[in-house]
Amino acid sequence: MKEIRFHPNTDTHDFDFKTKHAANFLEEGHKVKAVVMFKGREMAYQNLGEDLLNKFIERISDIAKIESPIKMEGRFMNVIVVPTKTKTKKTK
Image (cartoon, helix red, strand yellow):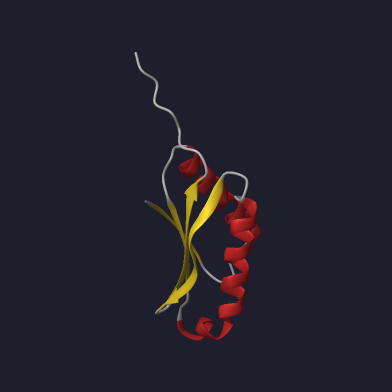
């Protein structure tokens, strides 16, 4: 399983960059855990984290499906996605 970490106010460029990495992991057949980490007063803005994860799910919905829905665990909000189809290994 691969993990991609965000913060509630992650910039769009960083979000796109990390989402691209997650898509590459999914194409290789790995599960991906997307995590939004909250620090200090950011805990008051959990809706921003949920919006970010929903945007992430929307972006990769063509190559992945949700295994575990969005949930809050302490200071971390996460979602686990799995590839819709696995990469086939080539035989020699």
